[in-house]
Length: 279
Image (tube, rainbow, N blue to C red; front, side, top):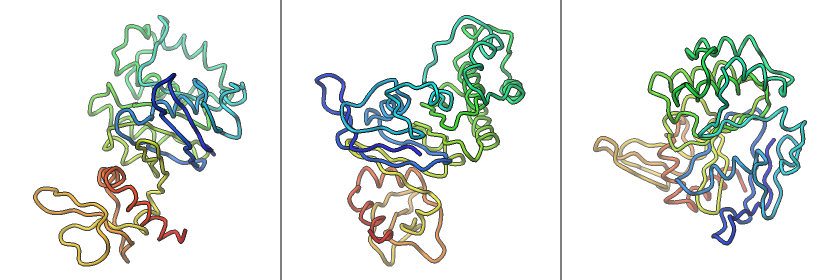
């Protein structure tokens, strides 16, 4: 489980990125972290991985405090950054050198994934394209066996076929005990992967279970005959709305609609979810 309690963070004298932020993310989930540029998605990832420390409050990952940078946590946590600074060695040499830090590293799986991604293990990593570097790091990450894998914009630099391959690979190789947190502003890249989302805006974040959400709010195509409209927009000339309250036959919630509702009608959305939860 990942737990943030009254979290505060600021860069020097700048305005606070987080102030009193509390958030709980259950274990064993595939979570998309969505938010506009500048709301703190990458900062959150850095806090969870121990690269930076909060100015106030607490962070707990697998019952460890990341700021202590304990070996036992780092053996079970892997970060895929948006941009990787890789050494001038081959992919195979990198695996040999760094896999020893992960007791559950799966070498056969890593070999399989490199072949699946068409990454030449004999080539120096610095000679690979941006997309190939990203695919190598993703293959390595999924092979570590770490219980928490953090990914910051993993589909940046990937072409359309590679994005599809990335989604298929994550679905096929994520284990039941692994928690994946994927930061992105490319909402469509995640829809088939994630089972929950963390929506972020300035000063707030909330975790939504996508399987439970249709029992609390509904997506309605065309005119709305009942219920409180939380957000509405035109799609191909016809209205699409999110409405408070579930329907007898709930439909999937479009992530872009949810994202827009969260940002444009935060109080209404949270009131609808709280009412359905009986809070």
